[in-house]
Image 1 (cartoon, rainbow, N blue to C red):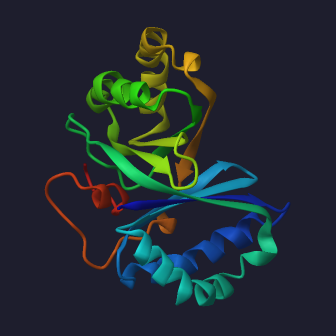
Image 2 (image 1 turned 90 degrees about the horizontal axis):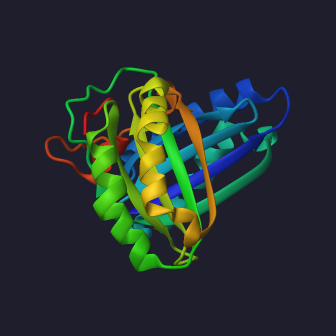
Image 3 (image 1 turned 180 degrees about the vertical axis):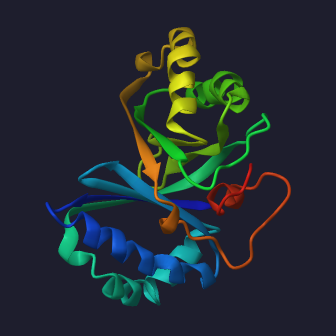
Amino acid sequence: MAITKLIKCTIKPDRKEQFYRGQLAWSELDSCDGFEGQLGGWTNDEEAVVLGGWKSDEDVVRFMDTIHDSIFEKSKQSDTLSHCQIQYFENVLNIPSLSNNDAPIEGCILRLAQCEEVQDVDRFMLDQTRVWNPEMQKAEGMLGGFVARSLTHSNHFLVITRWASILHHKNYRENIFPSLSRQIAPETYINKLSGYVVHEIDSWKVAPNKCINGTFTRGAFFQRNTVI
């Protein structure tokens, strides 16, 4: 059961640079058993988002029980936070890119869509499989992604996609998304829909020591400068 850890941090005023530097300490994750990779960045001047990938829940527990606290202490990030929310999700569906997109060295963005209180889970999965995912897969600049399900709320889903630039995502949002949304009408069976863009910080990326190359894997989504 592949796990995604979503961390949303609200940063205290004038502590953004300290948090930024502290995030570099998490490079030690690269040697952890079961670690698949980490990406992160800013949604705005006060909020940072970090995504971590793990092969299993057992790997997450082992990490939390061993070196997590020592890394967190080294990072000195506790003094920078006014709020921190952590959620865990299980990967349920991959969204590989079907276009020839090269992952740039920097400038990538993550788009996260939170779908909470989904009233019809079967319909949600069918819409993702038949409509949303095929169109996103073909979109220029879409580097890959996946759909994940909350471990604590079975009707809460997270759709994560990675884009080569904010302009590529803007093109999808303005020229492709509207017609799909009208066709599916997700608001009729999803009570809470929200989303945000994360501007990636390249120095926050952490790849596992043993990277996977070749065909699409969930781990490849997190690996540094990997084309999916």
